[in-house]
Length: 272
Image 1: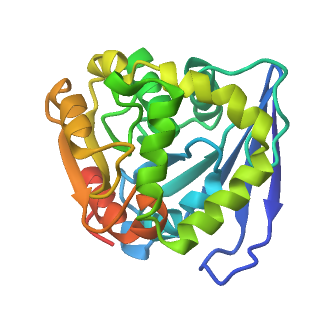
Image 2 (image 1 turned 45 degrees about the vertical axis):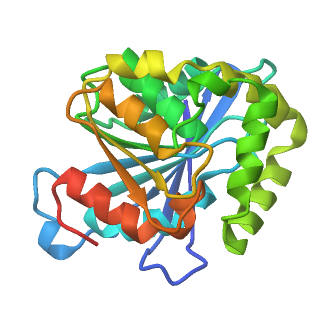
């Protein structure tokens, strides 16, 4: 059963109000923020896209806000807070990537979403990959941003090393936003989820997808390097890889304009 509430916008973002949907599935609660500031010339279009943004480990929908604001004039934007993250209660059981994918798909079904353009960042890319693997015809086009984890490096020390190497390229704004989000999520829930992220075989699941895929990240994203994204793309016909100059793993936050242009092109609705 969905619980809905309306929050008055605190920023001058062109929104009259922001709709928030919450769904409870067993002991897992998921939140979906909806943003839509449709441009008049697109209002009558029968093919208005729905962009679905799924965050990575430790962060939340707030990491996607700049990108959401950039996309919302061109379509419906749904930003997820996954169970246990931001201020949502921690489920009693440790959730796998399959579990996260299940609640995302169930929430989208409850919102009557058809053929969304799924966008997942980092762990969120795994969640999107799992949705695409289980429901190959559900999305005709999707974007994986900084998909993890490199198949030959699925150990905690190797992942931490990659993370630290990439972090020196992150701008201060990314670091501050991410650190605040990690604090809200709590160390226990992050540590409970990390093993699921490290062990998830995205390279085995992604070939089941039928969507047109765009695999994107920054040139300094050592967590999801270009060669790894090229390998993933090679398994899905019609996929392509985009690398944003100067950016690192937090590309969705600081290079949102470049990603928005790529997403709008993927959706066939022009550029931001």
